[in-house]
Image (cartoon, rainbow, N blue to C red; front, top):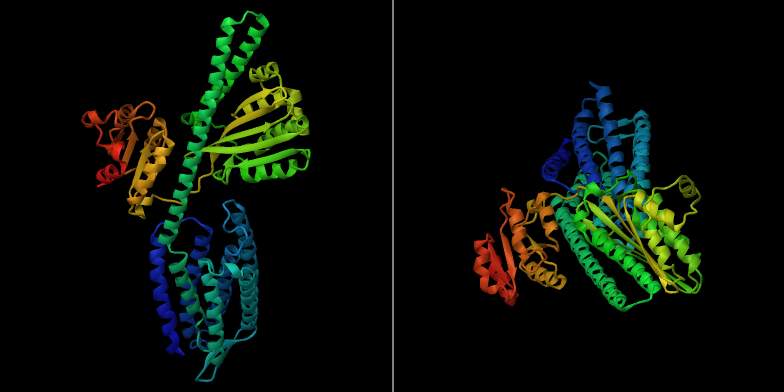
Length: 597
């Protein structure tokens, strides 16, 4: 019998080597890695128990109790390992596996709790069952009620795996199903071999093969890290692009009220009717409020700091909240009114805030739109500006209803009071008017504005800063990827895209920024870059930004200024001012190649 001890001994050596490599390296904190960790640990325990089993059967007469305990523990191990792997099967085959929300974590925690409870109960029952030892001098193996229960449980568990594979037949080509298929095949081979010779303990070696296979296919920390970093990079690029597009749109929206103010002010100079002049002044006042809202509360992302956020210890998923509102309200909208909902794809899955008050504010505004819009449309838009661990929610509800007079709009905008007793009571009944909504938004630390014209419609905008729940899944990319990272700074969106593409082609990672304050924040937060490229045409210019960076004595990152034709002739002056180099826009392809070399 001891001839076959080579199987567990070799397996133990291999799994220990894999364990050293796996646990030594930093790992992504994921559900799969959590399961894999327990598969590895339990497999090591199982191999040690298997080796002890070879000695236990020989010492059963001298040390009966110890031998029986070892043999029973080994049988229980086989069940426990199968149950842990079963959790992996249920997780990777879950319908929401690829979704970005928190549903998979909730499902995993539920399965884990049930599995732990069931495993403890069944393991205790198995340990209480008798075990027999067969030994005729040639063959030695165990049998009895405990092994019969184990075989039955294994058949049930493997049956569940086969059902899952059949149910997800189209997904079997994906890597995460490789260990499941391999495990079914290996356990079948183990069954065949042990039906021929029950004295060969090979199940644990099969488990080792599965664990090592998982390491080299899906649980390798290096592969996981690279995949997560690539996902993270794509997400960052998407967030940056959305932010740039939104700010470009907001900048365009500034032009309209400015032009209107100029037109009205020109007409006032020649207007003699006092009533018309008063109406024009009201209109200018309204437009000024709109401009202030855009400039101070939306576009100024430098104000997006943790100090300005009223943190409420309530986690919520905004996408789920908006979807809930959509399903609830689209039934109430008139058939002649089109109800549209647009949600940004970059909304974080978990935010901290008062979701109940936010839901109440949005629903109340939509209810108001439904009440006064008989034809046309009602549109809910949700966008975000993300800055590190903070998220600015930009929510707008627009309709083509009967509108509100300019007097009422201005009166509402000037409103600066706290919620009174009656309004607090109305929150419970959810019977909330527009005045109360503005106060609710202010109470949440947000900003509220309204734009309306009689017979043309109304647009309400809400801006609220929320804290993001950061999952520290990623560590410094430089430990895993040899690619260097360049920070590219410009407020020209098309230029950012063109240069980013060219730099990416050279094998570098690129992060982009459109604001001088954003660059300073990144450096203060200890973000590291190989180079910083700053467009000299950015607002505040490149030199003042460099001077601010140089105030930090520890700042050593090379800063390269990007110059256009108007400033090419003084390029040497920029070097004298402290820039590490310059890049000329006149021939970007050659210049980028030159600078990076």
